[in-house]
Length: 253
Image (tube, rainbow, N blue to C red):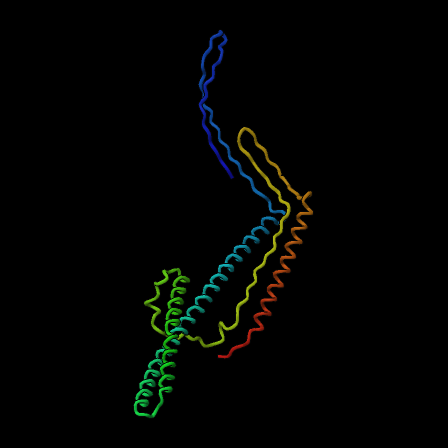
């Protein structure tokens, strides 16, 4: 539907019956209102609306897929972080234990109850354990920075919050063990239409108009075949996803 209004002021020179030339001024007011609608005889509009709705649902599912990937990456990174922190705690305990063992071995060596080889072995074991601590610490910092970036924060925003070691939360129950598979597909259809338009102004016209795709029938049939093949491809992908998920071993809680 459309509407418009225009106003113009005109000035013309005219010749009077007596031969005199004069000027005439007049105003011109124009207005128009256009309205048109389409009769959905063959279901083109209904099919288009269904297709757009399916596109919206597909976009929402794509967003969900991105969120699932993001949450999966967050969970994996968090588990790696807690694992590295636990390894660091164990390494620190081992260092304290091996330090005590070295001191005992050195005392025994002074008393003649152990050899210098025993002392060197204890010292080598302690230094080997200490050498692994820097790599664990750097790995912890890298995982904290990765978590911060995944949460749209600065790389060091979560250092204070995640520096302390903590266990990974566990969830009992079978819910969430098996994957959820979603498949969204849609088909498009198009056909002829009927339209009617009315105009108001200096003229008035009304009447139906029908558009039939006579010379594009081959292209439309080809498009339909392409969509059918895409549908079959989607079905095969869905079956492949189901088979891949069914191969996943069951876990008991």
